[in-house]
Amino acid sequence: MSVNYGSHRLVVGAHYGMRDWLMQRVTAVIMAVFTVLVIAQLVFSKGPIGYELWAGIFAAQWMKSLTFVVIVSMLWHVWVGMRNVFQDYVKPYAVRFVMHVFAIVWLTACSGWAIQVLWRL
Image: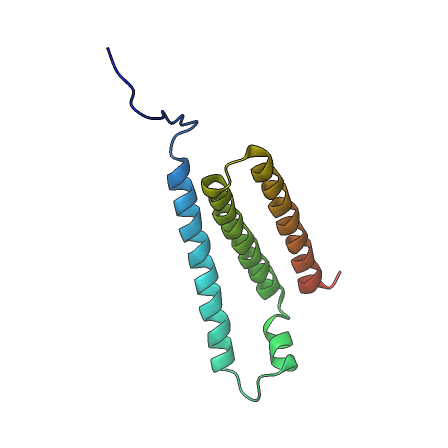
């Protein structure tokens, strides 16, 4: 006969923690590589760093697409982190639900804003 001491935790799925951990690392690497790429373009450019240089760096379609991939990676990175913080530290379900919904709406709006900025829709 088994005896349970303390609370018994219900686990609803396998390897969710590993998936979140891996997603945080993958998105962080994507953002770090992009940052190094942009810094390298700035270091190896000629002339003053101004609007023309920045506009030139982000003018190519491949750079706009890469930038959007990085923005989506950053938003996903933020979502995983905030979701984990909410689940760990916000105990009332209703408050946590509202915070999840707010975070999803905010991150979706940021994604739309990024599209608008990158492609000037």
